[in-house]
Image (cartoon, rainbow, N blue to C red; front, top):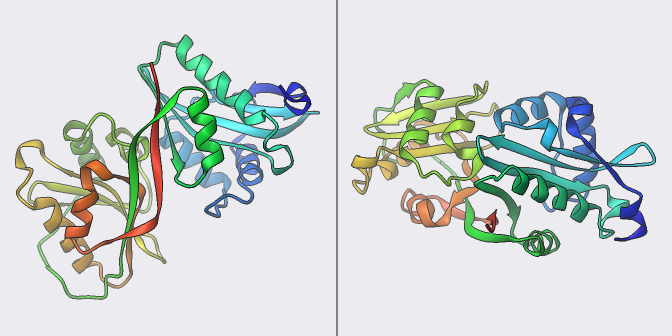
Length: 280
């Protein structure tokens, strides 16, 4: 352990406010591959939707000041490391490993069935760190985009409740979907979320006031698959809301929907992630 890491103490996130968590995140994500800014209310909403367990999340402290964090969500016997970072001045000195080892230790103490995370492809330092404590890559998570310049296949979309669509995703989707697009996450009410159905295909979208609209959840009922319903739904969404571009964030499992978005006229974006899980 480096001298910097030996001077670190870990305290639970239950000792800090959402405002303090937002400030810590803004510090530790300075210079991140994808620029990101955290606001207090956004952090509050997202962490609640992601089932943050403040008693199992860790703040790294040095001389009374926060220098890192590892935020963990928990549902039953499954956990997710949702965010981890270290203040720029202390990176590469073992602070991240200290927090990560605590997260892994606590997960094993709880006998979790699964501990997972996502990491941007190209963040080689983080990937090596995760692998060194036992994480392995489960799948690639892709991103897609669509210019939505008008035209396309117009169909009669049915507006549905966000919770109803989320329940379909929970009941009919795979158990190992990325945490952020799982049915349980999508049940949490969000102001900009809308849900639609076409036939037996369901979607949850983020209708931002400006910038691209975002796909957030997509599912076809189990006994209605391989009939083209998801492709028709994607095309109908793009056709109905063609005033702005569309995007699907890097949470789309390559093995499940990689070809689907391409068939619907999307193109694959440059960014991608790995979904990683802790080995037994």
